[in-house]
Structure formats: structure tokens, C-alpha cells
Length: 387
Image (cartoon, rainbow, N blue to C red; front, side, top):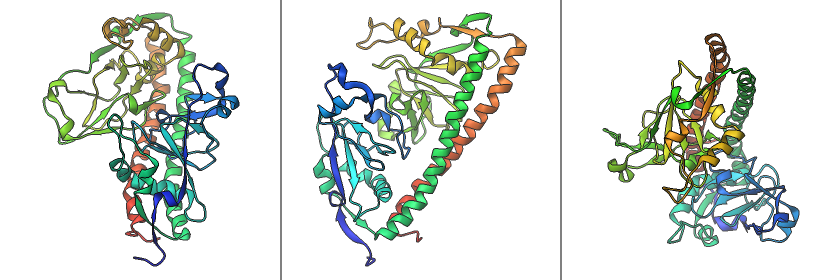
């Protein structure tokens, strides 16, 4: 072993901070200025998390076990979906299903710690405990030892990996700006619409519940946990032992829009762009396949995800057949959508298709950068690649 490396427990190189939740019944504790993290906010494989679904007040922070994390601290999910990681770009607090991890600066570089944990997360999952949920406890960090290089080497490794994550993050910001531009264009065109037709006239709707005739050795699948803010953030792997042909998932195609019609949360939409051959969607989704000769897929996606449409979908949801509110595909098909004459339709496609293409290219670049980062990460940590 290199003399500059040491073997050390994870618990010895960082402070482990517990989270908490203010009383939800007290309105003075919520809707404040302090971001409050739960795993749904950072299960997308990006290094930093910038937005949270919920926020708390200073009074909520002071009257609960919630604690603030500092810039470049790390948050890790410890229950349910175990081992999701993110760094904090500015002070945030978090719930009790997560831990905050603060690097001991004299021992470990903050950014290196993030990548070290990313590489070690498989061991964390294997060491987790619990009969109902897989759970990471403070003892989990106590029981895992790693090889730690000197601080100079740590910083060099972190710089290399950060450069890839910076490119991924910049590309994501460009896509967010392009999405906003597309939304404004769509809003402008929608205001000019003179005719409305049901969704069922411009798209087919299919429940995701038939058997795939052939299953590859491994498949990727989409579930509600893979969608954040109506964006497909990542795919899940479904191993051979998990495949159940009797209740198989539906294969999805380019330009499909998937929608979770059943679950506690009825706002999970996702537009499929450049899907891998082995991608399927879990049961509980409806697959909306637009007729591209009648409606632009990006335009349709925007129509389905407006605030007013979300409120409408919640309003028509029924609990007559399931424990949770759900929407029948037949009811979804009745939604009224704007359509346009031939010339306006051509203009919409001419305007939106280049934006969609650029978003797609950026997504493909990010996939390649992510694969490169994940490939060299263990090699850098194990000194197989020298810097």
C-alpha cells in the first residue's frame, strides 16, 4: 500500500448529522424560506440539489430536531430509498430519513468525500439494517473502512471528477433554459387556438399491463421515483430475477408520454426522448402516444403539465376502485387540447423541433459524461489511474 494512504473508518472522517421534521399541523413552521430536503428532491444522480418541494420557517427549524447543513455538506438517504447522495450548494435542512455528512477538513476534502461515498454506496446498502425498510444507521458508517489517500491526491481526484460533473450540470442548466423558452412559445401559440379536441383524438392511451413477448437479459424501467418535476431524471435496473412475465411492463417508444394515473401523487408525467431498446414502464402508468401528424409531442407535454391541468386531473381523480385517487384512461382521453390549422402546426414544429433536438443532444452528452465519470471513479480511488 502506498505510504501516503491510510485505512480509516467512514465515521472518523466526517460528522454525522441527524435530520428532523417540524410538526406538520403547525402552519407557522411551514412555507418559509429554508429549503427542507427529502429523498424525492435529490434522487436524480446530480451532484448538487438546488430545489426542494417543501420549505420551513425559522420557527420551524428552532422548534424541531431539524438542523441546517452548510455549503458543500452532503446529504444521504438512510431509509426506504437508501444511498441517494447530493451536495448542498447553500444552507438547507432535511428530514429524519436522511443524514447530513460534514467532512472533517483536516482529514478529507469535501468533494473527494462525496465521490468516495458515491463509490462506497454499494457497501452502505449491503450494510443497511431493517425489516420494513432498508436503513442506514450511524453504526453503518462505523463498520465500513476505506483507503484514504493524502489530501493533495484527494483534491486532484476530486478536480478530475468535478470537471465532468460541472459539464453535466451546465448542460442541464441549458436544457432548463430551453424548456422555459419552449414553454413561452407554447403559451403564445395556445392563446391563438380556435379549436379544441379531446386528447383521444390526437393520441392513443394504453394501460401498462400486457406481457412482453421477449425479454432481454436485463431491462431498464421507469417508475414514479424516476420522475422529478415532470422530467425523467434516471432509469432503474430490473434484474432477471425481478421479471414477472405474468404482469409485465409496457415497452415505451420515442415521443411517448407516460403518466402515473394511480398513486398518492397524480403529477408524474415524462416525455420519452431517445429511449434505449430495453426500456419499459411499470404498471400504474398510462402510455400516451401522440399522433405526430396532429400534435407536437413537446407541445402536448406542456399542455398536460400546466398548473390548471394538474388541478383538473386532481379534480377528476376517483377513489372508487383503488385506495388512492386514480384516473381512468377514458377520463384522461376526454381532456380538451388546442389544435391548429396546417400553417400554424408547421410553424409550431419548425420552432419546437430544433429545441427538442438540442435538449436531446444535451441529454445524450450527459449520459456519456455520466458513464465516463462512473467508469473512472473506482479506478481513480483504487490508484489504477494516476494523476
